[in-house]
Image (cartoon, rainbow, N blue to C red; front, side, top):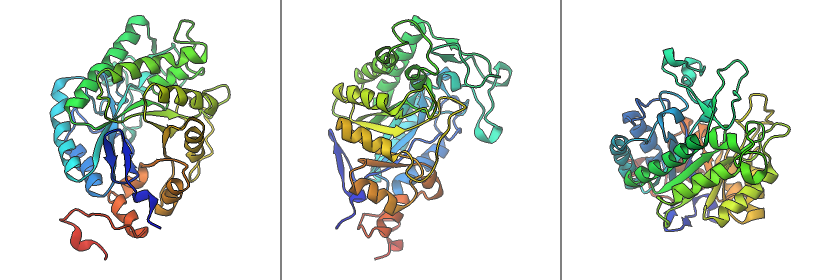
Length: 356
């Protein structure tokens, strides 16, 4: 039986040649949001390495939405050009270029990991952060500014404008980042959202901001191109966002035209308790897929070809996203194809290395 990991998947008018996705991974290597040759090589090598979909790292919709000063951004037209170059190369490798749009909220204004990841103040190149409520991620951090109605509208408008630029840049898949404790997730969870207006309190109110952003994105994103949403299925903390709410939200997103839920978890609170292990998040993707009939992507400590094949072959998810394993091996798709005895097309420049 042919390897299911290497079966094509059509989503709307876009066909992915296989089920291997390079997960969006921050490189902390941009200057003023601009992509560089590092991003061309990083993303391009994974396209030539055989992955079907390459999702660019969390790309900020505004300067204040960056996790760090080194994050990519698409908040001004001048940032489009280099991304066009990168996307043309990805397409030339028979892969699909995707982008994840993000706003870090209270987790913004941090140093790169290799610089300690600490919060930066204005004297260190940092900035004031925003959140649904004036509650910091760590007790010893400066409290974020609670967004007022005009602030909320600005974020929604920023997502809309950035989506328009993403189309111009040639992206063919767009993912809204509503996970990992960033701004949309902060609105979703009662552990970070203490608002008493229409954006806080009930489940319907807490999901409103994410739905507003989704509608703004849909107003600019072509209807024939795939739209994903990444969520944290659970906060791994008592009283937080949970898998039952994730199922409810996923059902609503499907009804409103979202094509796939990229199912991760955690990141909202510093005291989370995550039982990390191989496939530890896959059951969330499986449950959402089975209970809502929406397509899902599985992530998290998936490192082997057989592991990924089992996830697809047994219908637990429709795509498998690789992060750290793809950093260790840019040629993940080609390696896995050999291991699973799938005959795939190699870049002609590399064909002489293909084991027949």
